[in-house]
Image 1 (tube, rainbow, N blue to C red):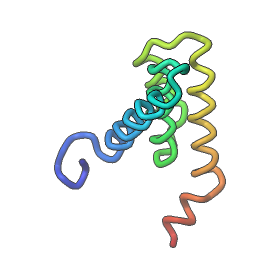
Image 2: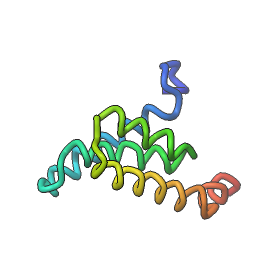
Image 3: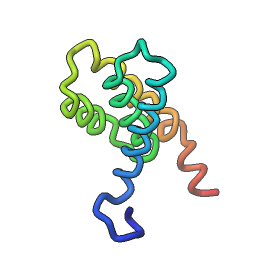
Image 4: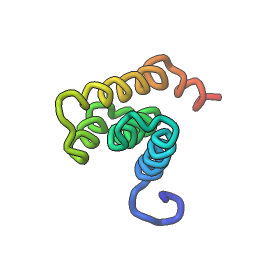
Length: 97
């Protein structure tokens, strides 16, 4: 959306892909709540590219009105995805390549 002139930059396409991936995961694992699947995938996919784990996790928690039990998977997925891509230097190595 950034190159086409739409508002949203690079963040909103990743959030949209995360929502689609969370909905797709819910179809296969229907015993996990759909809101938790969508909220977790929404922030973890975006945190792999943009290094804002706390901001994205708060976005999902406040957007879906999650309780205390549902915030733990969101924080874990957000920080683990951030650590794998940005913390290990994988993203920097791909950019320099």
